[in-house]
Image 1: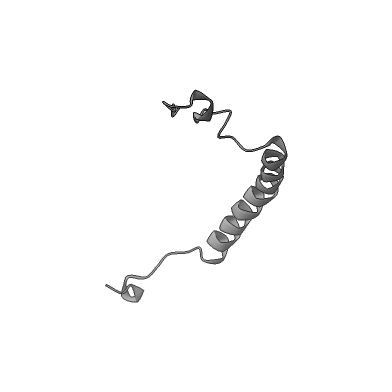
Image 2: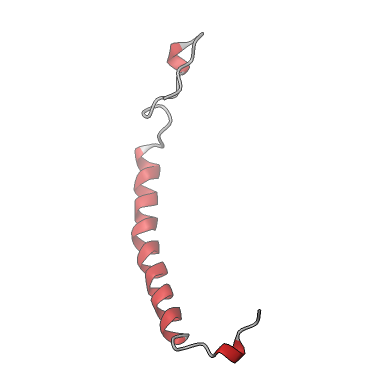
Length: 60
């Protein structure tokens, strides 16, 4: 991805720039818990504030 001219062993490759397996597993766990929470929150807020907005209530 980003080669190093004087020292090729210091080049940034996808393998060298990736996080450790432990970090990736922690982030996967957080994402598997967090994404459904965000989706549920979005749906509940949409449900609470559903309905038409009257034109006279809009502020320009």
